[in-house]
Length: 241
Ligand code: ADE
Image (cartoon, rainbow, N blue to C red; front, side, top):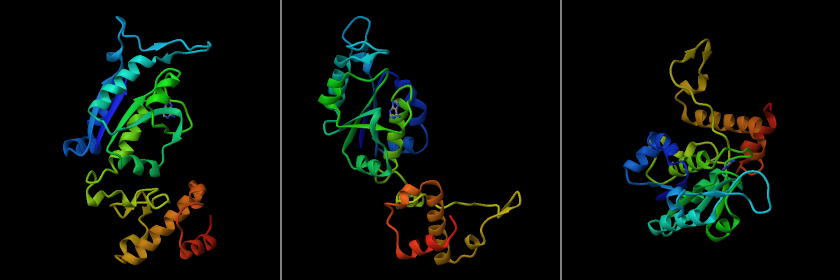
């Protein structure tokens, strides 16, 4: 998958994209990430990328011409890409949306700054505006990193089978069960006995129940849409919230 990121701050991406799973995905050739400096597409001597808003008001708006030129350049080598804009006005990023994006042939992600981008660029070029949560960041760069991370781990072949995304939180509509590793007792807190039992059916049942309880406690909204079995419902009805 080709991902092109359009930003005024390409340096912000170097650390996060040069480490861990995103690094490995690039090294394996499964994800190709290109960073584009929007300012390079400004035609004037001062490389102006923003201007005051028509109608007045605080802040600056990203000018349409450099942004449009930058998107068109990125499109030349990522022709089938879906164009995303990171913005607090977008639809919320979710596991389901990440799965959907991971199946696209390419992504072009426009990182918004200032008070936003000229609306005509959004209308002409943007397929989907995405928010990573109900709070305002100083710019769309961190949000773009979040989108790329969430999507990359879902691209086939990026995760090895031993770290598969299948058990991650949200993949089955629930939050993930708690995990433990050695030592068996840490600061007087023991690992739950069942995990040491070697009984795989019992372990699977315990994990399912933990996921159900944790989801009810932290994210009760997810239980409304999670696919629950009759056994899950019985467990929830007879266990303490
Ligand atoms: N840019 C500023 N705030 C944002 C948010 N919450 N999500 C995505 N992009 C943003």
